[in-house]
Length: 170
Image (tube, helix red, strand yellow):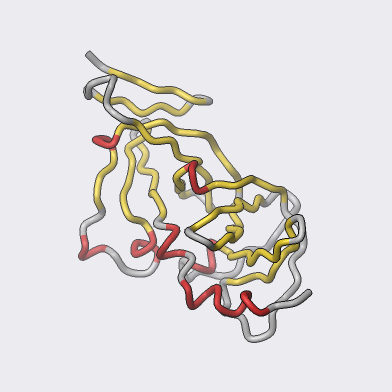
């Protein structure tokens, strides 16, 4: 028996037991590539708003925003992957995520969908390929013959990147 979950045109198929635990992910794009984060880490999704720059911040930190009284750093995901900074437009989206006690925003091109998959549908990335962008991708999901990289938010939003924002006063 084939169990398929579909949300907004995306599906993930599995021959697994339908009672097996499943996970939900928010999928989004950076250029032509698709990535996902665990939906439980997502606090909200916002349209682009200008950031306040932080002097001497790491290149990938665009600046900070005031989110209902909380100062949130915003990371350019493309720059975090070692690529050029994103040329931001009003169409870009910031996904606010919570990692442990930290909250941060990640700038993406567009949010795609919510994907529900079984644990057996997640495939590990071989260690030899974990460099640069791949070091931030902890596993992949096969969706309609496409691979969606599941980001490790812990690796992406490292302590060293966010230390600067702990003492910022706007």
